[in-house]
Image (cartoon, rainbow, N blue to C red):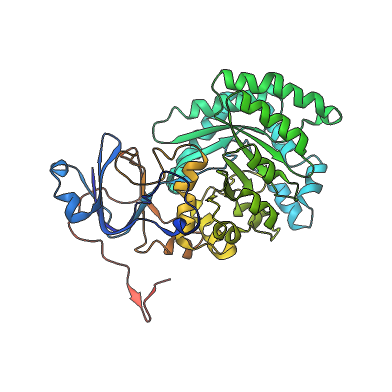
Length: 436
């Protein structure tokens, strides 16, 4: 396949490490670019006149991007996409003034999702996740991390991980499985130490032995797992060969971000209550700061993570949806880019980097996804805008008109018929504004 007429081709080419500081603004943009795909990988990328003249391009199926923006598929590096039902009653309760903590204390929140999860069978969970994958592709996401965490007990957690593995059998998407310790089951609230030992002695070893999880995560925050409990769990997971992530500093400042850095976690996520001292501790480590502004929007907390501080301090930042039924019911990465720009003062270029190559590093996939470079997987998306800055600018919209995974069109709102001329631009009015 030869993808031609890419008005702006964002390659994200660059060093083989998470991008930080000024590097996050470097998109490797090629105007009037083209991508040659062969055997599921990028064979060549560059200006169209050069790529199309390559002998390898002869006879290739031509796909016209119509002068629009082409970039790597989004990598959503933090989701809870496997859940049974939404929690709209809690949404209404928050509108009436109930807090996240009050809802949890009344048996809602994670515990409510856990009750539903225990009643669901594995096949139903797999089918549900496969439908969600279709929506991810529709919005331009080609790789997503998916956590367990709504099982709480050993067997329901394993059931979730097995459902994630079964859904991963699809060739048009990639799921990255994470074992998450989300909360203590209600029946063991008064015996927390026993639960921690149950996880360390049974759940972590079995998940590792069966290859059900690649990462391990803990919700370390006020009202959930303590620093001491989290360190026990994370250390056990590391000994079992799992890579580490950590929910940190979302509801309150606990010092969890500093612990994540000391334990060499791949990423530390949320960070709404991060301090300047925490940022100094994170600087120079390899831990990626994964920010989840969708949760702040939905919960109405108003306290967004300090993205500008992090970027300016040279700490690599990733963006993710945190798609879940309680605090962030969206899988639209384009909306997350809008929030990153308007609420956290990231530039559009920084946001794109955070949602692609840095997200790929946050899930251990940067060797094959997150940028369009020769030898990497041909995961790319076409957006119906001529300028990449319009992706966050036109917020709440789905600009994705085509998703290509491993060199194959897996979602399209465009005809795949080859065209030799750019698609006519939308009519303009007055001072050059796009028609509303």
